[in-house]
Image (cartoon, rainbow, N blue to C red; front, side, top):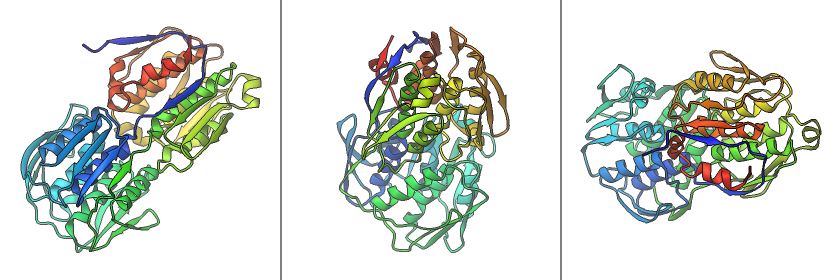
Length: 441
């Protein structure tokens, strides 16, 4: 039975090295591409978590042969573009990185499928993706509320002679889903994005992943993407999954915060200057707040810089964080240690994540004594005048990132309770054990 809560004692300082688990975003992209490719792909350092297990279960149900060497090492025999199972029901939990791409791929697979998830997944909009797919002949029905999962996918009559249009300001996963699916048509395809495209670094991950599996997409700024007629997926043989840059944010922030009182540095291994993940740019946010960052090819190290260490406070932040929406949550908690009011801007996509993260973060930050203004797409955070409020009971909303980022409050010298700590299994099942391994209580 999962623990109802975890009480964290005040953490005096953190110091040490953390090997990151594999990136969820890259793991699920690589798993799907390996399944669709010609040939067998050997995947190393794949994330073992709830979200990747949902993808693996779905691929196996669709007829893909996957051999498990270990929890993080897999061999996937590709189906050369078409799943052999043409009728099945798939349960995908709350894994958006599985649900959205599979919706697009299965709409082109000439079969009958039902896709469902947990109640929160059924509250996460998918209408823009369905509209885009219907625009090229896909046959998709809503089984519950209009524009939300669960879905029934039927045999469609796909045509790619006209551009596929999708709004860019709701979720980058919709564009990712189309980019992953359209090479399967065998025809020239063009995607046109209406409005501002959010979370662009996640699209960079998708384009890089496509390139690894033999498909080169032509990008016109961030407004249009063209896929050539001869595109098809080919196994690259062996591929390594990078460490998760979003998960790195907690430990890098911990190193900087702890450096205010003589702790740090903390080094994360698995991402570095060569990372394809946008969330490595969280290191730049920490530098703006007074952190000292050093970086190698496959590692990043963080502690407080001299000015921050001398003052014992971080610099307040005012920044557009649209490009790093997951790591931006860590910045919200780091703002509790700043010398004034911080403003996190252009983070409206938080509202359609695992929970309404804008509302959740505002509520929980207030429990620690912060004054918080919640706007439609921003948070304004003023830390308490003295210490953080002790014994705050943090609700996590079944959201792994809420649980992980609020663990950093213990670095403020106060005990904190994390409710439903098991929700971290979505991306980082061992998170609290790893945090304890570098902590001095």
